[in-house]
Length: 315
Length: 271
Image (cartoon, rainbow over all chains, first blue to last red; front, side, top):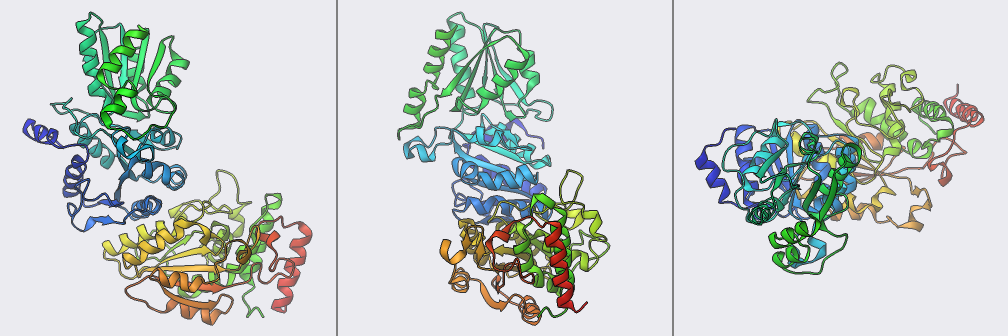
């Protein structure tokens, strides 16, 4: 689909949840094979009633949701399932293992409120292990939008590609990173800040905006770094990792455990292909006490100040 | 009293023997044998020439251990031409495994092996059929009574009835045994009919070895709610050394046992 600047501006006024309803309504209007099943999140994600007869509420039942999407795919539909990230991935991990890993069915999983955004509800509601779990399942593609427009584009990617996709939604209101249309068929990652070669930062999801802000601060301090938005976490965009393989110092930034997520994916590439030094910034293998999003970002050094401080310390 | 229905049991024994030391789910296949025979030979809608015919009925073997009974029934009606093409049910070039692996072109609609997922998959199919305006095809789902220990069975049951998916027919193979022994000693499912009724299913209770009962239950039309057939069966039915023995949930069919079993089955047929 083509997007005018006006439409892109309108999309940026949404938040990561409302963008789901916007994206799916558009996709459904273009292709009646698009269906949507949601686990008591239809109003939260603005999908209820947006897809004619093709959206189904099933209540709090993620373990039913996944095979049900599989059955719909079996019958020729392009089914999207929406639930909160920790539950659609970990609660239903075995169902995903069978439906996506074993059968390879092209279902689309939308995990809302991934990362730290639901921090005030406590560790149960945080998805800090979802990338790790989904990465270990064969056939799975994992995408992670950094703003509302890239989110809409990644929904479009998921609908147009006959493969299983996990769409990881972090953050809530998201600042604009892409104000012009982007081509995701050829680009699985985007260079979003070109400050220099002192270090390269690979970031994902809502952390990308903070990484850009941190890079701006570092630039004012005379330290030039480059920020790459990793919109795809699996398969990881090795062309981007190769492109910056001459930069000695690498940082990864994610709202996820430092084990198993973006940091691990980059580490796997670097250990086999380059001589770079990698520092992974994320949650250090712990569950967190209930607290506001802002305070959790601060506690994990994932806010802009924390990123600047950590990067300065390592450089 | 086998009522002349031992061909399917011979096929089951034959295929289970081919697994050799890989061991076979002989008990749970024999408990399903009569239901499978009646379903495929008298009830199921399929197109001999087109495995993907939109108007076919779908069969989901949620209790994956019953897959060999399903292949044997498919062989009986000619949907599998030759048991030899099944080989030893292993290897990447095979189509048929002791727990089914999805292959729609070969009429295998689902991959099983992780229990408690078939009914949820059937919901996706049943919903889709209605959405496409297909009001004639049924979705038959085979579930074990031991399998009913999985909470996901009941999560799916609740949603199937809420969505009024009256094209779903859940068949519970109530053979009362699971690996560790009698189901009633492990996690009692004794109120099986009441359980399914309370989840909104129309429930029929039958003797799962009586062909007339089976056919009647399979063909009764229900509207507005999904149907559950609680089939009382005997694990290992038809072979004296297998019947009601939990060891035969999965066990090795040696050459000697194979010969002994075939003799028993031929004897019962009066051959």
